[in-house]
Length: 145
Image (tube, rainbow, N blue to C red; front, side, top):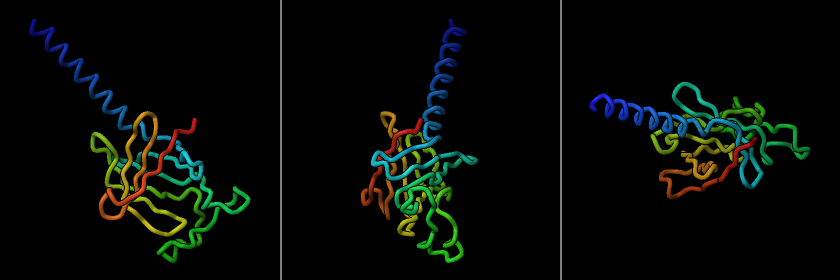
């Protein structure tokens, strides 16, 4: 009887751990804002998550293809780089429920904000803010298939 209980407990722990890991990894992939104005790719490096611009209506020229330069970057050395492909989302970490402690660089303005991300009902919610999360703005994304 004790062996059966122990085996059952071990199976439950394995299932819970699998769901926790899969929940953590659901952020990885390509996402498009529901407003269809920006596309990001989220990836993992070490134990942190990052995102790069794939496309955005404010980061491409009027032809919709050619990347604009990072002219509003506070670092003058980076102002000649193209915006498509830059890592704009940095340092997110999984806290067991959501991705926190990140920074997001808003290339069109040259500003950097704190951010967090959570997934709910197959949607990704990215909240950028200054100071406290309450004083911020949330963008909603859907996965690109």
